[in-house]
Image (cartoon, rainbow, N blue to C red; front, side):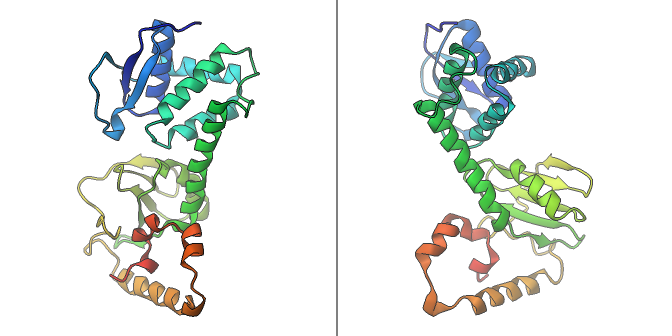
Length: 263
């Protein structure tokens, strides 16, 4: 199907279903987006012809099925992961990619790494996956007085849901919560299942990621200081290599690592 005009600005709720609904409406009305803006990112809405799109599971489902028919389920997962990057350019990248995917003959487009949009999409998904892998080692849990383990994170990408399978496997017998303080959402595991949660108020100190003093286990401060002492003792100053350290542990993640805090 050819998409002519007019070129308009679409806004949506920031979910993958919302984006797929935008794609469906753009094809249905043959109105190509000039911009696609996620309301979740708090982007300033410019002046112009704006169409606000509400997420429609049925329409999003039709786009999903179309993606699988034109490629495969693995490619659909790649799109879903890339969308979590929350870059302002990602939504339009996904639109350009899907426009080509649906325009090309079956099975010929999505494997073409020489295409700029295919390459950019794959690289975007890789950056998201790389941050997920990093946070497998960067999450630091604190024990609460009711024996639950909680951790605050502040990732660049919306990855908190992607962390759940790893920690569910690693700590299958514990109640734990990993909370994204920037996006105000988290995943909670009760030893049976994982569910998404939103906390009221400021449950964590924004500068350190610590939970409130009254909620901490009585020995939590002791173990945090013990961990800091251990880290200092194995950190040989004469062999310190800050550049290499930052390559493995970027400085933007340090504020929620107890070994980098002296509070």
